[in-house]
Image (cartoon, rainbow, N blue to C red; front, side, top):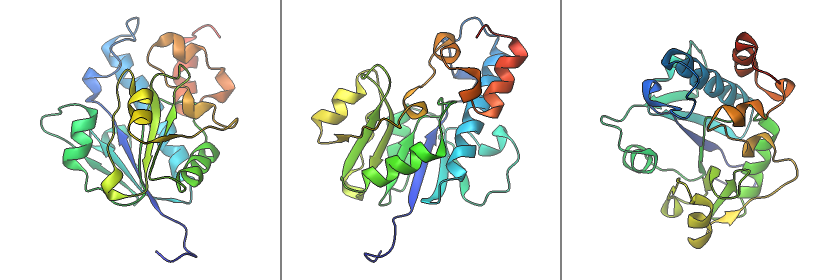
Length: 210
């Protein structure tokens, strides 16, 4: 890549086997949990497609065709067998390239502009991350060098990244990109207009209180 070329990013989107995801949404049936997982993932993918700096979106965990029919050539999937956990699956299955980021798929109010800004800011660092609203976990991990790539997702991942030379990216524009939804309360704390269309339709169908 020459100095005049902007980096092109590969975004990894880890999605658990649909029947095993979002166990903390206890009030939803298994079928509804699957629909919610698909809705949030589709909203995230739709925003990623809008970001010019993204060259490839790689879904790790399930076949992307299970999320719906898309003609986008820059979407692919890798299915581990068996699945061993987000960090192991990513490291064992993905051929790491420069400018690779891992983004969690449960960000239903994510906006393309947030992702574009994150990628721009990350270009100044070997490793970087975006913490979630609690400041304990992370929603995005970014690496600009093959040898630096080491995802560390988990309960205290923000500290794990910081202790291993990753730089936290911050901006007043980071709103949806920090609001992951681990349970129903997280989802209902988001106002309906901020949700992506698929997740909004799910919430409206259930007539959850807003």
